[in-house]
Image 1: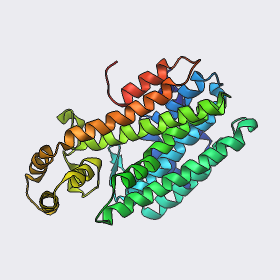
Image 2: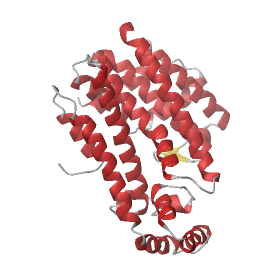
Image 3: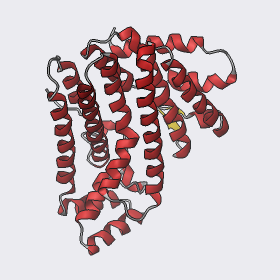
Amino acid sequence: MNNKELIEVEIENYLKTLNSHSLYEPIKYILNIGGKRIRPSVLLDAVKLFGGNPKDAMPLALAVEVFHNFTLMHDDIMDASSLRRGNETVHIKWDVNCAILSGDAMMILAYQLIENIPEEFQPKIYKAFNKMALWLCEGQQDDMEFEEKETVSIPQYLEMIKNKTSVLIGFCFETGAILGKVSQEIQDKIYDFGINLGLAFQLQDDYLDLYPKSAAMGKIVGGDLINKKKSIPYLLAMQESTPGIKQKIKELINSQDQDRIEKLKTVFEQIEVKEKTEKMIEEYFQLSARSLNSIEGFDLTSIQVFAEQLMQRKH
């Protein structure tokens, strides 16, 4: 079985251990509606890469997936989202109070799962987990505040997406290295790889919102702009524009013009937003590649393939 299949089996078996109390029904629901299971798969790949025991890692992989879905459950409340992976979100299917409480329980369950890894690894992994979880909360808070702010700088935005997206990916690579008992230097390098790959991935997500590769991606083109999110194409446009163009961008975003996205893209074309976003994505991807390629003595092929697939690149 591949990593995803292994994780699905482990999730299925784990959910059977939860009792029938109503608190756990939303937890079973959100973990059963699918997902790519990218984060726990990354962790298992890192463990295998560095010669650790996958059986030792499985409780941590489960903890990562439970924690990730906890953040999604609470994010859906904050974003007032009605759908998650094509299904009703927990706060819609039940109610907000149930979603908050079940999410809180998922955080505790994640900690309980970490108790099942060998004790020798627990102090370092708990420390890394706590750091990651707090940074992720900081990123979510910043994301909410940025929606109300008139001006957000590109460094501020990069820090926000690092905390909201990258630190969990970095944690998965880092703890895979911890379980493999490699040196602190290698742990730091693979963590940096995960952080910069996560940044490249999130910047690409911003890019694809406005410049999708195909209509089959199933998103509304320019949805971030319509929702007034300060994604990287918007921030680059505002940074590179004259006062007059800035005003035009703001007017178009706030208008009800049915063609406003195409008009915004025309404005962005004048200041090469597409090309500048592509350049930034490439810079962070190359930063991640440099960190990975600086690791010697291990076959990095599987991690390189993962990075290319995540970024939808050809070999």
